[in-house]
Image 1: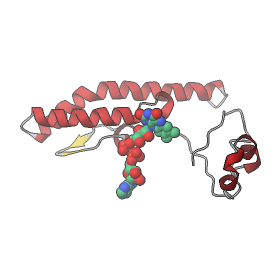
Image 2: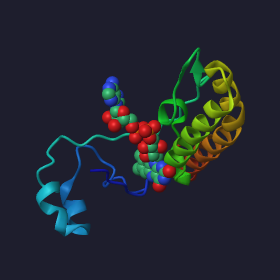
Image 3: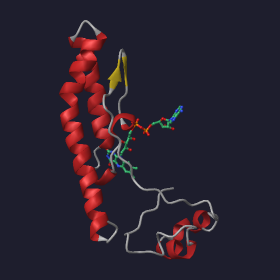
Image 4: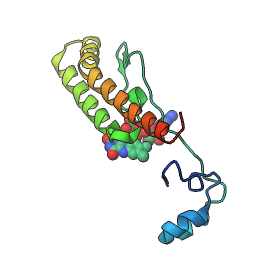
Length: 132
Ligand SMILES: Cc1cc2nc3c(=O)[nH]c(=O)nc-3n(C[C@H](O)[C@H](O)[C@H](O)COP(=O)(O)OP(=O)(O)OC[C@H]3O[C@@H](n4cnc5c(N)ncnc54)[C@H](O)[C@@H]3O)c2cc1C
């Protein structure tokens, strides 16, 4: 279960989770929230940038290649489009190595742009809330 609250709501962001705060807002989740105990954890979003998406005949697609914060809701979209682009490139080239090279050249600029924008929005939100 992923729970999200505005950054300024310190109590709602506390770990261990303070169930009373959440139950007040989501009474229907009381059975789950009251049983959480100390199993809650606080995660921050991460960004992944690799030097290259492939080596030899092996390629990676999706978050393992270009994880981004969900601020623009584009992570899975990029993963799916890059996978489709990979299939197209493999159809277009005789050699897998050539296909992977052209695939990354074609797909990467838009993905890198999206990842940067998503990370920028994440950082800007943090700065607005005094988190540096
Ligand atoms: C809160 C949130 C909201 C999001 N909203 C959107 C959205 O609206 N639109 C959008 O496009 N994207 C969204 N995303 C991003 C999207 O979820 C990811 O970009 C997408 O799931 C990446 O898919 P993936 O297959 O690359 O990786 P994953 O979905 O992470 O899949 C990787 C799989 O590999 C498994 N695995 C890991 N290690 C091993 C191992 N050693 N052996 C075997 N299996 C392993 C994992 O269990 C997992 O099932 C959101 C992300 C978050 C966190």
